[in-house]
Length: 216
Image 1 (cartoon, rainbow, N blue to C red):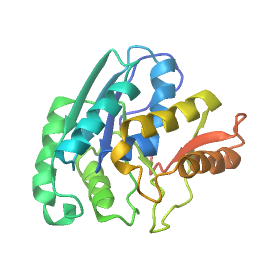
Image 2 (spheres, rainbow, N blue to C red; image 1 turned 120 degrees about the vertical axis):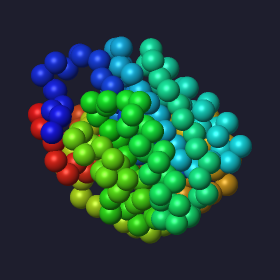
Image 3 (cartoon, rainbow, N blue to C red; image 1 turned 30 degrees about the horizontal axis):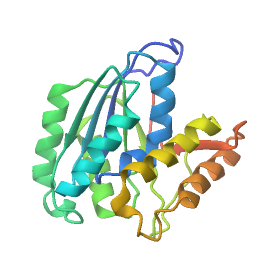
Image 4 (tube, rainbow, N blue to C red; image 1 turned 90 degrees about the vertical axis):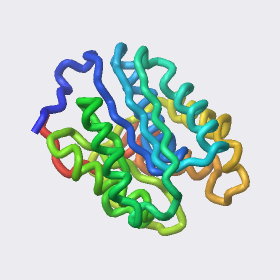
């Protein structure tokens, strides 16, 4: 398995971010990305989203540009697979994964959690492990109605500034979601605060991930 180096903590990374929907990456690992790109200058990011509409795609591209401002090289791919139908078009999504695999050799992959109750999220997670079998994979979490949050085993402490920056960018770019009951600053700040408590982060904020296996 390809090792993930923490010894050379300033070396640039090749990062692959995978999201079923247009705001998933930002919600799940947006603050961690902001921290990594600040601490590892020169890192390259490939950002891939699999479901969108024209309005949502415009939001997603604008948001990705903001979150990736510190990445000198980035590729943003937005697909338009039908939301909520991923298990039924998984073969076509798998083809998109194979195209990604041919174009990038990532040091680190961020994706959905395999035990996520949302069918689209779960399909992306399963295809991540099916396609990238020799890579460091961190599964992020999305708060939602299903109440399926688990017990993560990897924590990334965040400064207050980075945590608030994530929230500000979400609300700046995803205006189509402002009417949704769950899309609240308290939701995102609360998630980072709970994970901050769990890892005793000095600022009180962290993002958390599920890592099945990793070689350091």
